[in-house]
Image 1 (cartoon, rainbow, N blue to C red):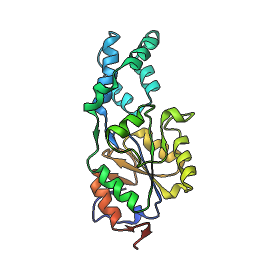
Image 2: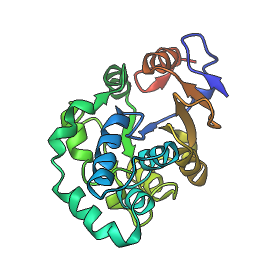
Image 3: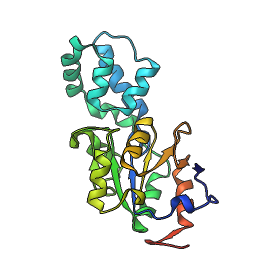
Image 4: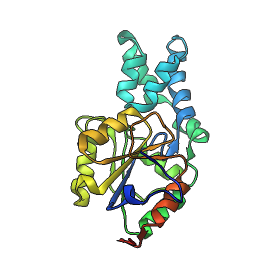
Length: 226
């Protein structure tokens, strides 16, 4: 395991063609938005606030999985109704683009890397990209609504590799949860952990400017400099 920094050994970064990003907790700091959304649903149903364990669960799972985890079966239909009627614009102030991300994406694109997203988020992903001015950076954007089995199943990563014509060793997946770690392992791609040192990752990233500086030492355009 290596910590991304400007003087790290560049070998763990060698041979990459595709960088895949998780969304929640990586592209966007959406924790508060998710807590407001699911907390509102629980409150409207007359249920107690989310526990710490429930907060961790809903932040890393699909909408369907999260709802079924925090809402009793006899209240699920009403919970989904509340979710459908929820005014998403109320959450916009809580979504924040991760620091240094856009600069990192610009450099990756200019250097010739393929960029993609593999997320547990569903139909709201387009709204997130528009809100954070990130539309057009990623192709494809694989959401939980587009796969038959969500993360940690590797289907999303397999689809990205097929679209880009790359092999697992040519892909790094940047995630922040055990779900992401398991998805990377199941697909055989490299796993880079963002701001979660408790994960088993080849590279740990505390700030996107750190990994950008490290990669600039070994990539120029689309060619390695060593």
